[in-house]
Image (cartoon, rainbow, N blue to C red; front, side, top):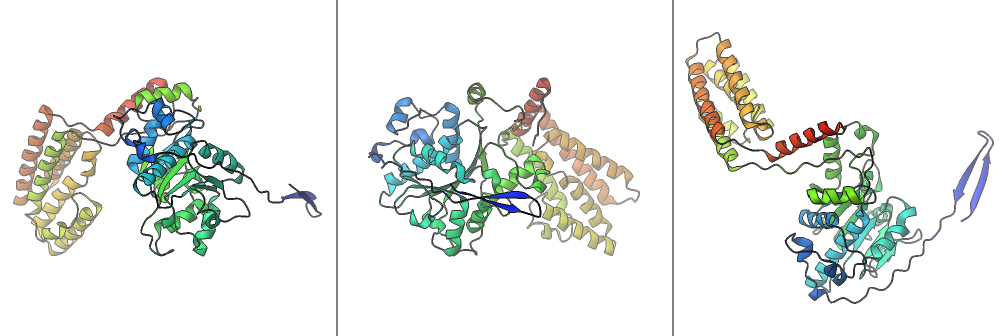
Length: 440
C-alpha cells in the first residue's frame, strides 16, 4: 500500500490517498461428491432429522445449531427471504449452507447446467473473510472479484463469486452479465438497500424488466442482516412496520426469516449474547378458526341484502367488500343520490358505510367487539334520523336481527385470531419485564 500526502494550504490539512490493493484468495478445488446419494429432505422437511452424520455427509466442518436449521428450512420454503439474526449468530454460515443446498439440488436434477451465486458484501474489507467462510462449506469453487477484475471474467470457472455490488451493476449496465445467468444472489448487510446504494441499483434490474431485456428466470434472493431498519435518514423516522415493508419490497421478499420456535429462541439466547437495545420481535402469520369464516360469511350476506335494495348497486360488484375501492364507489353513488334527492338510496348508502368502514377490523380485532361497535353506530344513526323514512326502519331492524344472531353464535363458539393472541402475549411478557421496544 502506498500513501500520498498532499498539503492543502487553504485548510492546512492532509488528504490521504490509497493505492488499490489486490486480495489474493485461492479457493481449493471442490472435493468430489456423489450428489445422487444426498437426500435433501432434511433441508426441506422438519420431520426429517438433521443429524451430525448428515452434516458429515454434506462435508460440513460444523454441525449447524437447531435455530440455524430452522432458518435454513424457512428460507427454502419461502424462496426470496431476508434472514434476520443478531450479530454472531452465524448468518454467513446459514447463507453458505443455503448456497450449497441449491448447488446440490441443481447437480441432482441438471448437472450439466452452470451454477452461479453472487455473494455481495458492502465493503471491500470483508471480502476475504466472507470468501473463506463460504469456502469452508466445501464442494464449492469460490472466488473474490478483485479490484482489477470483472464479474463476467469469473463466471465460467467458479460457483460463488464474492464481490462488492457495484461490480455486478457495472456488468449489468454493459450487458456482459444477465440476471438469468445467476441462480442465487446473497446480500450481506442487506439493510443497506436504500437510496442510490448499489444494492438498490441491482434490484432495479431485477424489478424493472424495461431496464434490461425481459429476464425469463430470475435468481433467488437471500438478504442477511442483524437489524431490520432503514439506512436512509428519512425512513429511519418511520415506524418499524413501514421499514419492514420498505426493505422487503426493495429486495422482492415477502418474508423475513427469524427464529420462531420457542426451544430455538432459548438456544440462541443461551449461546449468543443479545444486545441490550435489540428489541425486534416476530409475529406469527394470522390464522383463524373455522367459526370465523362462518360469521364473516353471515356478515357479508347482510351487506349483500342491503346492497340489493339500492339502485345502481351493480357498480359495487367489481370491488372487494370493504376495500378502499368499495368505499370510494359507495361515496360517489351517495353524492349522486343526494343531488337527485333520492332519500331511500341515501339511507341505504349510510347503512352500507356503517357496515363496511370497519370491515377490515373484523380480521384484526376481536370479532365480537367490532360487531358491537358497528351495532352501536347503527343505533345512534337510527335514533338521530329526524325524517321518517320507511327504509330506515326496515334496514335498522334487519341489521339488528342479523348482527344479534351473529353475536349469539359467537357467544357459544368464539372466534380466535392467532396474530392478536400472540401480540397480547408479547405485550404481557414485556410489561412484566418492564422492557421497551417497537411492536407492529
